Length: 282
Image (cartoon, rainbow, N blue to C red):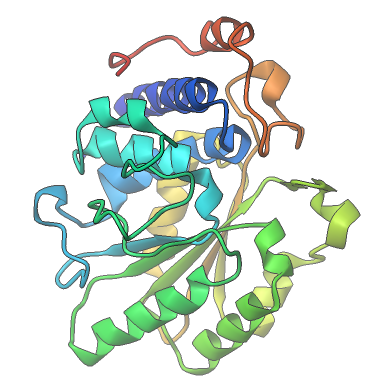
């Protein structure tokens, strides 16, 4: 377990990783990755009960995490590498042809920490429910976590899965929604508003936790602890995580411009200057 301050330092380094990886590749999705860096750092280092040295696809005897919006691989890979799933130096291979660190998570290369090829949005909740039911069948007391983009909730499969999980009392499942209000074509409200998200999940028989500032490490830790305390009570748990896309770099924040666009080599130093090196660059 790490202190809140240690986690904050880690998250800053993760944001540096994200910018350097995507700029070097001149491809990728830095915006959502920057916004969720605090959550992923907290999950990998303090919340998930999992051992990187003994990763298995089955996930028996440990917590499991499925990231449904697979385009945010920069933050997924950085936090996994910093946690010890694979060498930090491998981050330099991001999005290079034939490497393990593809633009979307791939199971074809047997990358430790990845159990699902994701990127086709809307599928991760269904996979998470299946894993959670599997744990119930084998009396495994560990939890299943999923992560979703807010724009992804415009996919119908999400709501079929949500209805099933509530009706079948899948109470070892915690689904987190990154609610940054941005997607590739504009704001979520402009494309297709989600309305009262809390009320919707509650109407599907879920318990809901709201984290007002998902870029505040202590709020993330407290909110996820609250969510975990609600498991085992007959209902799945949804965490609505309010974040800012592009958080950490002032000119990248609160805009969908960097959802799927990367910095130029000229702009990279200006962005990195706002994120002091804390653990050493790869």
